[in-house]
Image (cartoon, rainbow over all chains, first blue to last red; front, side, top):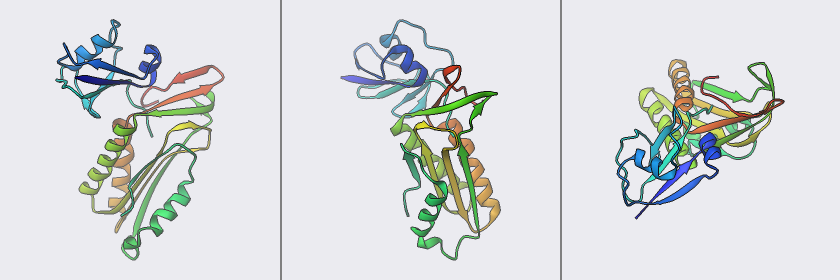
Length: 76
Length: 145
């Protein structure tokens, strides 16, 4: 009963870690995941992914999911 | 067919990669009349400030998934024979290639359009983040700079 949470780039640096493993209890959507990670507000323009697919903050999260928070992407 | 997406931690030579990919695909021989190529390279300045190095962070599982999907979408939308995408991660120096997109097709219109589509989609969909090092210190690059 756990959720893996990944942080990248500036969000990883601000939080000081790249991953959390959370107890699934009490979590129903992506926004709940962030609230469990930190009391700090979600930085503006943060992008979210659930199981490596882009997602919205109100998307449902299930046991075993991988949730990621990161700034807008800058590849290429 | 060989793997269409490569994520590399070390420097690469796009021209060698192109030659190797082409020779590893004998099915292309005699069939392609057009090859469109995009190579993105790290410049030594950004917005007028010198850049000494750049580190590309990425989300490996998600990067691969989305780059493979970009290749699939390009293949579905245009009549192309083969697509190759190579993207660096890790620390780069000015003049290092960052990305290579190559599209082989019978005709140039499909090759150009699919190549342009692939680089534009990569920039908005693939989870990479650039961190520049320069005289003013280190900073994360914002999209579309």
